[in-house]
Every structure is written in structure tokens, then in C-alpha cells.
Image 1 (tube, rainbow over the protein chains, first blue to last red):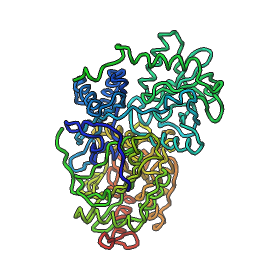
Image 2 (spheres, rainbow over the protein chains, first blue to last red; image 1 turned 90 degrees about the vertical axis):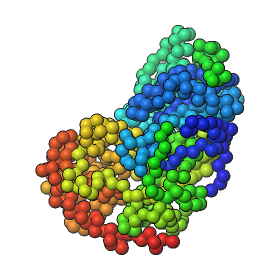
Image 3 (cartoon, each protein chain N blue to C red; image 1 turned 60 degrees about the vertical axis):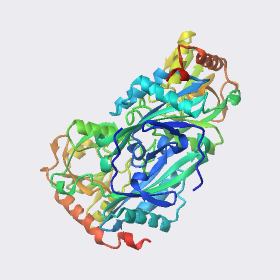
Image 4 (cartoon, chains in turn blue, green; image 1 turned 90 degrees about the horizontal axis):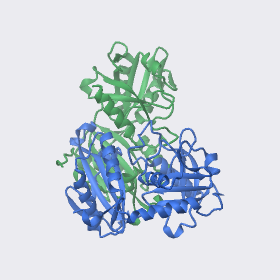
Length: 301
Length: 301
């Protein structure tokens, strides 16, 4: 096996900060062997966490829903996350907090017997769409693969069940495009690997109402739309509605607002990022210097 | 955090055998962060692997379907699995082979850039139902939680997407019963955490035809039924059909043939393991001393 090549990064495990290349979990952790884990990802931009409390709120909720409530206090959790960023020496970072079911004594099958594990790490900020490719935008296909339905796994709990999305990514690569959108069981669009979808038509914005992760970036778009009096509709979106949209964009902590300019080899609008997408994109990054939405890494000690 | 307590066991990673307590994977392995992995579990009973080639066939198929074909030759894989059992010093063992997507260089998001990882380990044989509780049998509920559908994740690929099953286990514990059966989207029964389901009525055996793992123990029951001319029907099983069954049993590598004697607080038949269940159970264990179905751990060097 080739040597693994790790990014710059730092992790917090078992009470100490370590280099990301040293951060390992036991293979008998149920977080690995059953994907019995939840997580959240917050980003740091120019030394500032963005909407940190909202990410922590969701993480606390997710860990409670899975019956392994995070035992850290909010302030201590913040210090750990900030510590990872400082130890990694990063200004722009992708910061992940993870709770796993952990290892159970003598590998008992009962999840109630496990010793929950908390991990955090920081690595360089990663982009689904590189900023220098903003004008080009994302070229995606809609797959027949169905996103895992909320009747199976509550989509409000951020989870690592990604084989549907990974299979979709391989379909996208086979078609020489950048990424993929999965459908739900009603054949409406759901989400892509790590991003929510917004469509724009003459009446305003719309985005799927259920069966998708309620992304913090998605919520930020809803908040921004309200501020500028742009109507938003949360509703099922058929593939025809997607195809008829004037603009389409993806939202993710890993890159913010990303125009989708081609779907199934058809241009969206004129194939350029549209007016609404540009406006939301600009407003989104403007929020990153607004202290109402940010917290400084260096203040969290 | 409390100290983890590991079972007796041994793992094979990066070309060497190590104690199970030392076996760890990088947290940046996509097998952890995306559950982008597949696996198989074979058992060893009194020093003999049971249906080893069938488990390896399925593992090879699963790794191919996920586009990370196992690079080991069959004979080398067998030697590694047997080596884990010998290093662990076990006569009865649960032996797992795992392929993960691995770590990608500098944490790139593209799964094609990852450095696939193979791991194997052996731990003591584990039972879903302890043999001394065979007469009591399993007491289960049918949950409303839907097993992740095959339109999302191909159920033929053995995978770690278990949050639906884990949530079901907690429902079972809340109801003071042993385990749970999930349903499919047609509200027919699918499977439980680690086991397939068989029902018995006057006409013979039946078991769900799709959306479930095609378990090796399930296949063994199908093979045994053919040998004794017991008709088997692969078809959707409604909850009413389940409730009307004379006998119900679960099948798993983790314990073989296990009677289900109570469902939703109603006795199955007279609440004792039935005649067919006993016959299949006996035949199943008889196969473990039949060289057509077994391979000696000590011969694989």
C-alpha cells in the first residue's frame, strides 16, 4: 500500500491536540464498523468562525437524537475547535466535530454498552467549486439514485451514510461532469454530495422542503433572501422544474454559494452565473466580516 | 473518557499482524468519514472456516461494485484471515475483512484519488442469541423504520450504513425486547440488525426476496431446504403474513439459526422453537463438520 499523504491539520482526541496524520480511531469503534456517528462541519474564514453556534446547535441535537449526547459544554467545545485551528496554523479552515458510539467493552453488540468518543479536527478550507471557476460554474447530472430517505435515516441528523452520494459521484465522473444531484422517492430532486440545491424562477427562490440536510449555508440563503425581500418557497422540485429554472445554485459549508450552469448537458439560462446567484454569493461573503455572524478563533481560548 | 476495553483479537493492517487494541485507522479515511467501505464476516467454528469461499466471493463482488476492487489474490486473502485467527489464539472466531476507500492525498474530495485500504481482524465468536437461550428464543418488535432501500444503497453490497438498524435497536430496548425487524417502503418486512428473517407456514419456508442482504447463512438455509425437499418461496412478506406464521427464525453468521418466539408481544406458535426451526438449526451445525463446507484455519498457511 502506498503511503498516505495528509493535509496540514490538527486534531483533538483523548484530551490532547495532535497532528492530523497521527489521529486514528480503533477499528472496533462502532462509528467505523456501523457508521454509528454524527458530525458537523463549520468553516473558518480569515480567522473567523462562521455561524459557529448554529453548527454547534445542530451537532448537540444530532448527538441527542442518536442517544449519545455530547458531554462537552458549548464553551469548552468552542475552545477545542479553535485550538485545532490554531494548532494547525490555518487562517481558512474546515473544522469538523464528531461523536461516535465508540468501542463497547469486549465488542458487545449492544450500542448502550459503548464508550462514546468525541473527536475534532481542522484542515485547510476545501472547495467543491474553486473560486477561480465561479464563472464556469458546476456541470452536473441528475442521477436515478435515490438519496437515503428520511424514513430510514433522519436527514436532520448529519451522518456519514454516503454510499448513495459516492455512487452518484462515480456516475458524474463517467459522464465527464463535476458532480451529481440525487432524487427522492417521488423522483423530485434532493441534494448532492455535500450540498443543497436552490432554483430561481421569475417568482423567486425555491429549494426542497424535506429529505435533505438542513444545511447552515442553506439557512443562510433563506435568511439573506428574507433580508432582501426575495420570496422563497420550500417545496418538492421536479426535474422539469429544475430544468425550467432561470438559475440554479448549490450551497455548502465547503464553498458557500456555487452556480450550477449545466444540468444533464443542457445550459441553465445562458450558461453563466445569474443575477440572483451573484447577489446571494456576494452577500454571503459579506457576512463573513460581520461580527453578528462570526467569532474570532483567537478570542476562543 | 473511560479506557476502551478490547476483546481478545488480532488484526492485519499495513502488511503485519497486530493486537486488536492497536488496530487503528486514520480519521481522514473516507471509510470512516463517508462510510465509504465494504466488508464481509466469516466465522470459524472449532478451528474451521465455514463457507469461506462464498464470503470471499461476495467481498470481491462488493469491492468491485464500489469501484475499489480488492487487490489481494484469494489464496493470500485466506492466509491473512487464517493468520488473524491464529494470532488471536481463537478456536471459535468472528473474522472480518474490510476494504475502505482510504485516505486521499491532501484530503481531496474526489474518491478516485484515494489510497484504498484493506484490513482484516479476528475476535471471539459473537452470538445474537446465546445458545443457552435457544429455547427461549428472540423476542422482537417490528418497527416503522424503513430499511435503507436498494434504490439508495445496493443491498447486495455489504455495508456499514446501520443508523436505521441502530435506531431500531433503541426502539427494541425501549420496549424491553431483544431486537427489531425493519420494514421496506411497501411496509413488508425486510431484515434486522445483522440477520435475515425466515417464516414457516403449512406450505414451507418463505423469506423476503429483495432489499435485504443476501446473507450466506440465508443461502445455507435455502440450500438445506432444497436438500430436504422443503419448499421455499422468496417473496414480499407482509406484517400480517409474519404474524400468521407457525414459526419464524432469524439467520446470521453471528449465531446461525435463531428462533423468534415473540413478535410485538404476541407468541409465535406456542412460543417455543418450532419443528422446522429445530431441524434447520441442527442441520446447519452438522454442516460445520462437513469438509465440503469448511476449511481448516491451520491448513491455510
